[in-house]
Length: 224
Image (cartoon, rainbow, N blue to C red; front, side, top):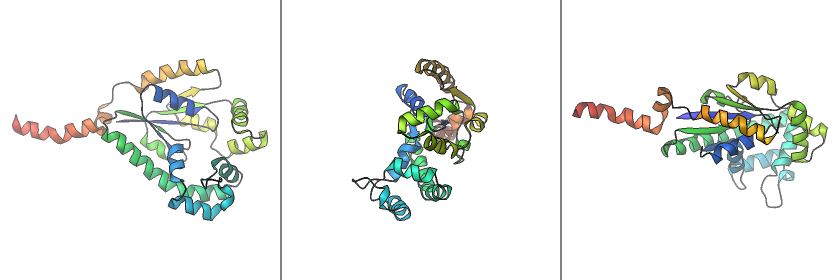
């Protein structure tokens, strides 16, 4: 099975690229979706986060107000580390479960969409790693427009993450999303061809079909 890593900085447009993969029938395991499910009202993680950050982070429904919690942790490194310690083990285990479900279904290619792919060391699971890059000015403007934040707040969130240029150097494939949607689609078509290349023998061996072949092959030899 080929596990493609998809990552990028905040406001870079990685979710748009993720949706393009979905539109072409390639399944996605999205760490943000997993995190939201882990933090659902009433879960053990929800109780831990509530105890650590107080009821001010809750919506009237009792669910966690993710943008508000994000503002708190992006301006306070200690609180950010505290939240990561509480969430990371649960998110990682849930991601593994979702990947296993897709393996059971016989999926040969999946995309692991993780904003903190390098920071969480999940990059060691993935090949190739696709990084969605954007220049700093565009990133700032998009983040302000998306979240309705000030330039100072947006800059604080950007600076709280690993440098985009540093991440870009670690990636196998870089998509420059500083331009138009048409430019992005053109680059994506080239990336899709690469991602859909035939599996290597190692990747085939990691797939469900490869595992079944390895299991039954000795029996075929005995019967032949």
